[in-house]
Every structure is written in structure tokens, then in C-alpha cells.
Image (tube, rainbow, N blue to C red; front, top):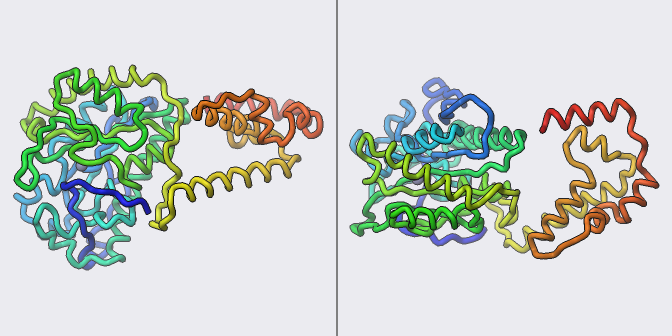
Length: 389
Ligand SMILES: [Zn+2]
């Protein structure tokens, strides 16, 4: 697993208390998240707020913390939820927000991250997490973590089916001082390798008069965090916006901040232009096996070669049937190959790239194996094209 240097602000160490009984909790999966702007067509924007709430399910008795402690930044990102909701309304886009505190389980961490369930935060012991073992963590993963991430997957699927390559925008906030040091940035833009949205956003925020942190106060490079999992792994443009909490604490402040951010975000999205899928890292492993990035890339390439070998052997499978059932065929694979080559600055002829998949010129394969489509196949093809835009 890639080692990540965490900046201060992400104190580490995990693990939890004896589980409340199922009767105590019995949460519905939809209680794991809030979906703001619930209806209407999917757009090309999805807002996220992993640390929206400081609520703790009743059976956990506040994890042993008093109300004052739960009102601080250790429990949630103060002001972030209001900004995320306001932005979602402004763009008529959906927002997925956490329903429970990050102290219960941190939705912006992978399943094996040691900071998934914090024992300590900003010097304070989280009593309700002190004795939690793997079983309790698994329970929280199942009840609170997985449904949130499924909701994001569902939104991405909805947007993709509607023909978008959605941009994911995650809203967080940070405490103005950490370990006695004042943080100068008003807004931090966190990103990993995909700068498509981060770069124009940093420029536009600075031009708009903000003191901007580029991967400050934290680094956006964290394997299996929320944007890695949904943005990087799906080739979607994404960015994490960290807002300093003192700027969004007053009751009317989040709405004002959202209004300023909306104009800037609009401009940054226009700078980026309509996005394509773009992959900057191999796919993440969700269960902490350590493997270097080069090896993972080779494994992914081996799987592609095996898929191609399979399709070459199964000449009985017609492209039109692949299109009807799955929305892609051999030609699509060849075109994706061509697009990936173009990203590396290599321009290939269409038939040259498709030939990699066919193992011969496409016209030759067509002559040898392609059957004339029946009227039923034609009709099914048109229907499936219409259904998936
Ligand atoms: Zn946060």
C-alpha cells in the first residue's frame, strides 16, 4: 500500500467499544446519509459532504463525549453541510451528506485505514471507541459507511446513464488553528493527480480574493479516501474544497460563502470544459493488500489482454448483441484504446486501434464472422440506445 504522509490535522489510531444490540439501533440504511435535492434529472455535478453531521446514534451514548465536545471540529466539519446544501440548490444538483459524526466512522477513509474509527482526536480520548474491535468496526462499516458510498455510486451511475461525466465536489471545513498555530488559508483545494478541476479552481479562487491553499492544510493524496474511491477510480474529475471554519460559523455565513463559491466554481467548470473519463492511477484495492502501482497497472493490463483473447475466441458473440446487453462492443474497446493512446500523445488510426482488439483488420473480422442483423436485433439495438441515451 502506498504510504501517505499525513499533515497534522489527521491524528491517527483506531478502534471501538462493545456493540449495542441490534434492537438498540436497527438503523435503516437510508439513515446513513442525507440526499439533498432529491428529485429531477441527473446533472454533471455531484456534491459530497463526508463530515456533515455531529450526530451520534442514540445507542452509542455520544461515544462518551459531552455536548460541548460534540459541538467542536473533532465531531464534524462545522458549516460544511450548509455550504454543500446551498451549492447543491444553486446548481440544481444532488448532494450526498453524512448523517452521523466522523467519530462514529470516518466516511472519508478506506475500510482498512487506521484512522477509520478514532480513539483520540485533537488530544481528546473518544471513550466510546476505546475498546472497539474488528467486529464492531465491521458493524459500523456495514450500517453507516457502506450505504453512504453506495448512495454516491448510485448517483454517479444515474449521471453516467444520463450521458454525463460528472464532476465530484466534496465540501469540508477545517479548524482555524491547529496545535497552537494559526492556519493562514481561507480555502484549501485538495487534489491527487487529476488537476482538471483543481488547477482552474485554485486560480479562480485566488483571483476572487481568497487566500488559497494548494493541497493545504492537508494533502489530497490518500488512497481509498472518498474522492479516490469515487473520482480517481472512475476516471471522473473531482476536487475537495476545505473552508476555514471561522468563515462559515455565523448563521448567514454559509449561504454567503456558497454564493461566492458558486460563481467561482462556475468559472472553473467552464475553464475545464466538458470532461472525458480520465484515469490517473490504477484501480484501488479495497482490502489493504500491498502492491506497488506498477504491478497493479500490469495486472490491469493483463486483464484487458485476457478480455481481448476471450473476445477473439468467441467469434460467435456478435457486436450488436454486446451493444444491446452491455452498451459496448469490440469497436468501443478499440476506440477506448485509441483515446488512451491519444492521452499519451500517440495518434492511432481508428482501424489500427480496433485491430488490436480484433487481431486482424476489422473489415476482415466482419467478413469472416459478422452475421447480418435480424430485424429483432435492430429493434432491440435501437431501443437500448434510446434507453441509455
Ligand atoms: Zn472534513
